[in-house]
Length: 257
Image: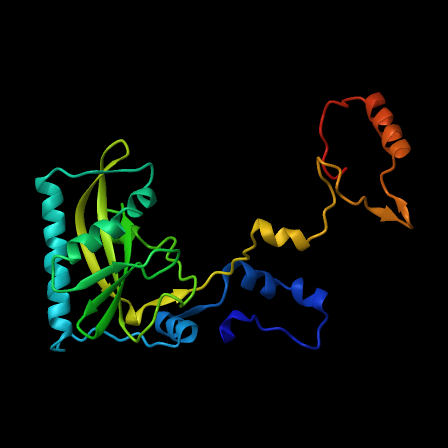
C-alpha cells in the first residue's frame, strides 16, 4: 500500500532519516486521515458500496437488520439475559455469535467469519453481499465515545466480493459488578468513514530463530567478543563482583551507571 511508506529523503543518510522528528511522529501515529473505502480497495481489490435508502434492495436489507436487532434487545429484556465480563471488550467477543443467530431468523444468511480484524460477519441477500463489523460500547453519551478502540483491519483476506460494509454498535450497561445488559443499538454505513492507520511491528517466537542468541539458561548462547576475546570472561566478572561487594550501597540496583 503506497501510504504505508513514510516519506524518506533518499539523499539523506538512514541514521538521519530515522532520527528526524517527522519520522518518529510517523512511526508513532501512522499515516494521516484516510478513507476506509480506499483501505478496503487497496488491500482486497474490492469496492465498498454505499447504502442507498432509495435502492429497492437496500431498503429490505435495512429493514431485516432493524427488526432483528430490535427483537434481540427486547428478547434480552424479557428473558433478563445478561452477559458477564471484566471489561466491555470481554463481553463483545460473544456478541458475534448471538447477533448472527438472531439474523438467521430473517431472510438474510449470516456467517461469522472469525479471526482477527474486521469484518466480523458476512451477510447474503440473494446475490448481494454485506459485511458487518460488531462493536460493543459502554458509553452512555455519544460524545464520550470518541474513539473506536481496537477497530482493527488486519488485511483484506476476509473480503471476497464488492459489498456494503456496516458497523453495528451495541450499547451495554453494567447493571452489577461485571454483569452487563443490552440497552440499545446503532447501525452505521462505513462507506464514508474516515480513519487513521497506526503502525504495528509484528513478530512471533518462531521469528526469533533467525536472531542472534546472546544469553540463555542452557548455555547455548555464543558470548560477545571484543577483538576475538570474550568480553565477559570469568576473571573480569569475578573482579567486577568483588568491587561491587566493597562499594557502599551494593545492595542497590543501578541501571546505566
